[in-house]
Length: 281
Image (tube, helix red, strand yellow):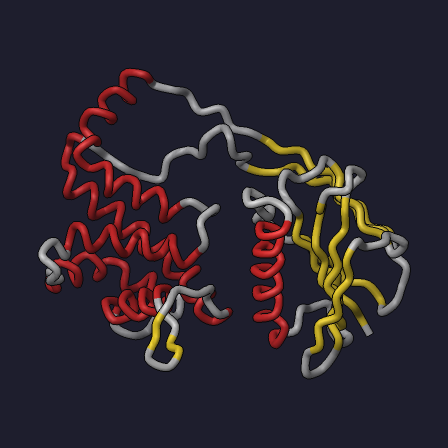
C-alpha cells in the first residue's frame, strides 16, 4: 500500500521546504471520504506562521493520485486559502505550484526542497511607455480586463469572466451580440478547441462556460461560487484560447496605434524557481 503526501506552500515561500515523519502539525483534521479517512494538516515555520498545508491519503499500490480524490484536492485547497484569509491574513496567498510525493504506507520519510527564485529583468522603454500610455488611454477598460484575465492571483472564474466581459465590450456594444462577428473570431481556433476536448459549437461553449463561472442554481436563486472540479478543468483548457481570441480582437480594433500581446512578466514575480530536491525514505 502506498500513500501520497500533497502539500500547498503558503507565500512568501521559505528558502527551504522540509517535511518529515517526525514533524508535528499545528492543526490536524480528519476528512471522511467514501473509501478512506484523508488527513489534512497545517505546519508552522520557526516564527509560528503557517508554512504549508498537507493532505495525506492512501493511493493503492500505484504512485498515482486516485481520480475520485481530485475534486477533494481542489475543495481543500480553496477552503485552506479561505480560512487563512479569514482567520490569519486577508493578503495571504498560496504558491501556485503544489508539491507531492509517495511513500510506503506508514513509512518514515524526509522530503526537502531548496528553493531559489529566478527573476527576469525586462528593460523599461520610456519612449514606448509614453506612446502606449497615450494611445492606450481611451482603451484602458479593455486593457484592464485583459490583464485581469491573465492575473493568476485572481480566482479562475473571475479571470474567465473578465475576458468574457472584454468580448462583450467589443462585440456586444448595444446588449445584442454581433453573432456573425463572434463566430468569425472563434472560428480560427476550432481545431485547438477540438484538441482541448471541446466538440460542441465554440460560441455555445463560450456562453456555457460563462454561465458555469457566474452562476449556481439554488432553487430559484443564482449567485457566484467556486467552480467544481470538472468545471475548473474545462475553464483551464478554454482560458488560454479565449485569451488569444481577445488579443487578436483587440489588435484588430486598436490598429497600428496600439499592439497587445503576451509580454514579459513584471520583475515582482519570479519567472521560475530553481529546485534542489532531497528525498530520504
